[in-house]
Image (cartoon, rainbow, N blue to C red; front, side, top):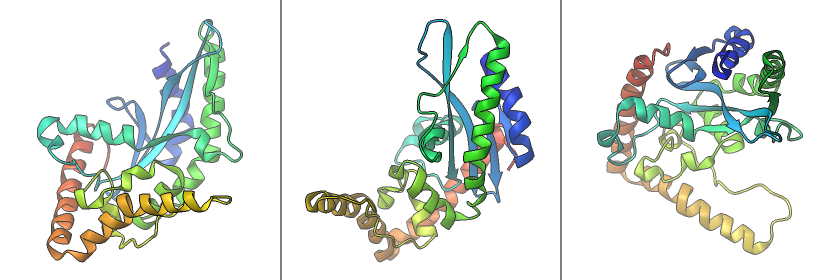
Length: 242
């Protein structure tokens, strides 16, 4: 039995009850909510401690149908390739959802023992349901999604809003006015100033330029609708229920 088939079979027992379906073209479990948010769960290989073992990490994430094509990518790549890229840049490892952090090294199993592989997959699936599904359930709309990205995922997906970069258009659609400053104890004054500069350069500055420019705002809203249309089409082409 291949690992991918074993992953699909085991995780199906845990995830289908929450509305997830396996998509072979992206090798992930996917759920589309309200034709607006795409939830997914998958895996990546990871280094094992011995030659007789193999290891994997569970990766999960969310992105929106407003995920933009950024520049000329739409002309250079197929819609299917661009959709697969959206999955890749919107995911984070299971460890980031646990408290305290766990499973940082992944899940290791004996590559010569299918029973052991299945047992480890069940452990990984149970951990995913425990730590991820409750957090997914709280993401019911775009506002909750933006908050989720800021807390758990790569916040870079929200940067350069004035260039319609990745999922940054959701800041416009949610009328976001967050200061994007880190909330960390023990930061020095120089670190706080670097934080403020980065926020202005990548997040608040580009976002406010869109809000303050009626022409750019109109273009942003038009791009959001265009992205939604082509992303929903791409999901359908991947045989993902929307």
